[in-house]
Image 1 (cartoon, rainbow, N blue to C red):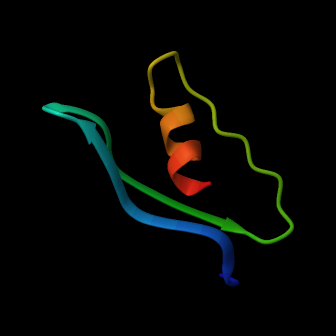
Image 2: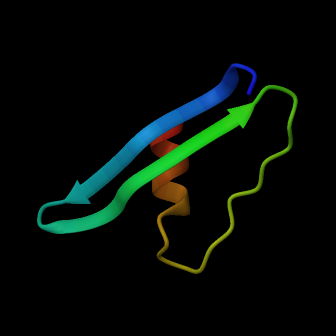
Length: 52
């Protein structure tokens, strides 16, 4: 695998006792198109905010 443009290992986020992201691994190679899909409340926006 080439060096990723975006990489996260074990990404976690909680608000108090509520865990909203639990161990996301993400490796997106340079030059690729990536879509993050999931139902409402899955943590998509939270993950993107952390990565940005």
